[in-house]
Length: 376
Image (cartoon, rainbow, N blue to C red; front, side, top):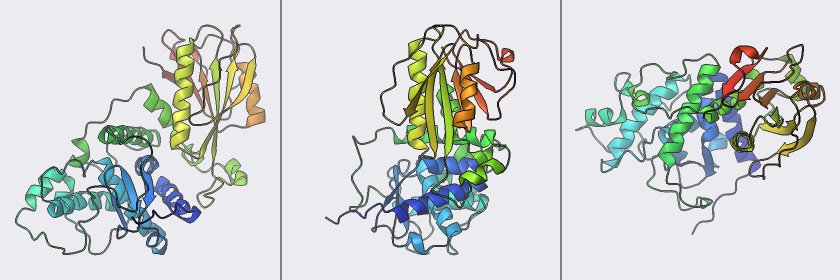
């Protein structure tokens, strides 16, 4: 058995670079790439997918111009996100892959990225569903042709590292959730929020997963400094620009009201969701405080760590937490509270998200920030 290629720092930088460059083109596509797991494999010509992971040839990828690599990775991620592997069923593999490539190539071009010169393109067909394109291609030559049609894999390459944990039985569901979150991030950044490419039937046929408060929280933390109204000069000194791949980070201050009016279940649910976001967005760092009339902490939040036991139980005063922003200088502040307490006189400079459980203060009662309602 061929040993798997190592995941080198160079490989990781190539992937991070594409994610950051795509963020400048499309929040929708950049969010999809954040959900993708990229694995090195020398058995794929350049890249391929089994519907769950994206396999990239570590010898070929570094030789590609950055914009070509971006188009290649987006091509494979779209195949995975649109479940092109799982939807093939008994259909002829080569023609199905050609139909799927027709769809995806149109999306890549719409994103302003190149496709190889020999790529399949049809401006009419690429706006249909892959099943419709497959039927339209009936009778055409399914031979090797232009070299496309072999990136949808029946399983992982033999040199791919084994998956961690049990086999994923909910790949399609997870990609639907990723698509929903991508739509939310796109809407937040000024896009349409439902289909950044226009009337592509392939996207329209996939009903987005229902957006609950968790997805909304993801949308808020998925923002980056660049997304907050242009290129803020205060981030330059901290290395937060597209070329500084290793230094980029976003700091979130998470405050949880433990005055007694917010139950422990809501507290733990919020903290667990923030930890989930940290696992998917490596550039996000978070520190947690509990608060009543005082601030208790800090607690570093890391993916998978046990949620610290809540501290507090007195009255409610939001001002101690906002005073901490001078010390921590967070990029975003998330405050879980019912809203009944003393607010600071002036709004902070950083974006603020109030996460409010059922029965909390009405939206107009919050003097600043965005308000997100927890479901019953």
